[in-house]
Image (cartoon, helix red, strand yellow):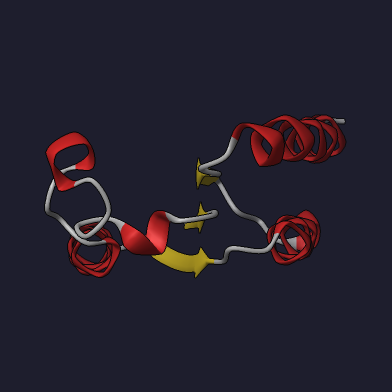
Length: 97
C-alpha cells in the first residue's frame, strides 16, 4: 500500500511561523512520526513539500500511473488548493473508471 503525502506552500515553516496558531511541531517532526507509523503498519509513504505550485502539480501527475491508495494534501494557500483539487478530481475519476 502506498500513501502520498503532499505539502504545499509555507508548510515548511510549521513550528516557526505563528506557533501560537499553528503549534510548535515542525513539518520534519510530522514526517518522522508519519513514516514511523506507516512503517509499523507496513505502508509505503512518499513525502513531498514544495512552495511551488508547478512542483505540486508534477507530484500529483506522477501518481497517475501509481497504485497509490491514498493521498494526503496540505496545499496551504487557497489559490493552490482550488487549482490542485481539480487535478486530484481528474485523477480520481481516471482511477475509478
